[in-house]
Amino acid sequence: MSLLSLLGSTKMKNWILSESKKVGVMWTKYFLFLVTILLFNQPLMSQDILILPDGTECGLEGSAKRKNDKTFNRLKNRYSMPQIPDLEPNFSWKTILDTFDDRRKFNARRAAILRGYVVAVKMSNPESCNCNSNDPEYRDTHIVLSPDKASSDDKNRHLVAEVTPRIRLLMKQKGVDWSQNALKKLKGKTIEVEGWLFYDYNHGDKSANIRPQSNKTLRATAWEIHPIIRITLPK
Picture 1 (spheres, rainbow, N blue to C red):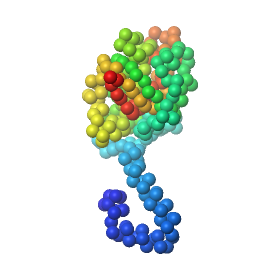
Picture 2: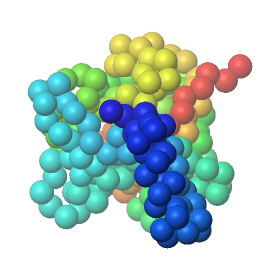
Picture 3: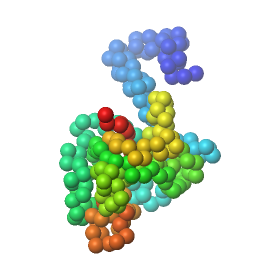
Picture 4: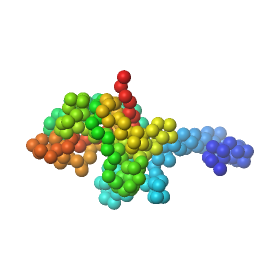
């Protein structure tokens, strides 16, 4: 029996009535308040654990073993919608492309909105944040952005934004297709993305802001929008 149907049953109503006589109206209201919170948070709570196609239960920490990796995976696997106070006001292509060590430039607890030209859309390798799943829909999608089409060939002006399996599933529940194949159709378009900021230290030595003299850089910065919560095509 579902929680909703249980609450609506005669047995439950009689139990609440009998308990209210014992503990008083105030405690009964408190109980109902807690139940209401539980009901409205069910869809979000269900995303804490992903059931992979092979039956693996993948939590927010994924399959990470080290403490730091567990923390980073929790950041990657966020799925709440940013609110206006969460937004980083100084996040823009100008600040992104400022060529200095930017490891502390932004705050990974903040969110950002960015408009850019889609240079490439790629499926990630299996990662610990997704319990190393090989299934395409349970692997991240990397969307490589540049400020505009004219700078799309310059890797030192690229930023990576990522769609995660949890967000993909949430969008599917809303009737929106964020599958790997659907997202590939964004290549060559200008889009606006919103999501949580994340500094991927694994790519620091491949970013122009950390290694400005290197000829092996692949991006402007190791800062990412990861995960993406919203994608729109500006008119």
